[in-house]
Image 1 (spheres, rainbow, N blue to C red):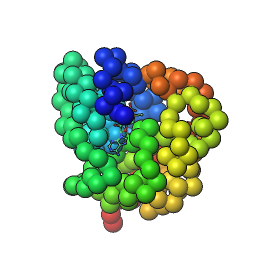
Image 2: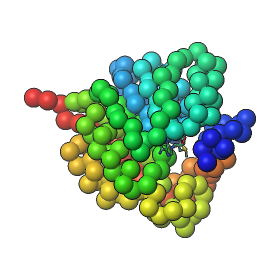
Image 3: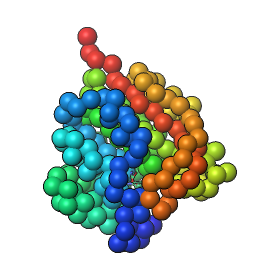
Length: 199
Ligand SMILES: C[S@@+](CC[C@H](N)C(=O)[O-])C[C@H]1O[C@@H](n2cnc3c(N)ncnc32)[C@H](O)[C@@H]1O
């Protein structure tokens, strides 16, 4: 499905980064970070982070997404390390100072495993920025999966990331206009959480 969607010559989620990501990066400040982006797609978020000077490793299952992301990176004079892999069996390696998961909707069992690996591979002091459609999005129909189990409950984030300190963990309705498939009032969950520093 994703390769087909991304075979369109336009960037279907746009070339501008996620507004939520931009807002949160402004709060986090400029220190250089090792970043992992999950479900990177066509590169809008990874390229933005690389332009800020971060070292970005992107993971996504789509070859077409990878190709568009690398073209976007080249056009904006930055580099991205982009792995094509299925998150269902992707083994995280090393530690990251920042992990970004924006509108990467996975079946529940896979999502739980991915959330667990995110916690395990987040460096002390590292931060996760996460945004997804909630199940209430089904009533709004302005983007995202149509299957309820692919949508993320706030309580799930609170539980799966309970080892971290929440800077933000909320569900809200807001206007999201990010490409042709994400347009209109949306019901989302948003989390920013930090791994405690070692003492
Ligand atoms: C709605 S797009 C969002 C892309 C990007 N995060 C953005 O905000 O523009 C969802 C992305 O998740 C990726 N994805 C979905 N399931 C995946 C899986 N099992 N493994 C790897 N990537 C997956 C898709 O290939 C797609 O690029």
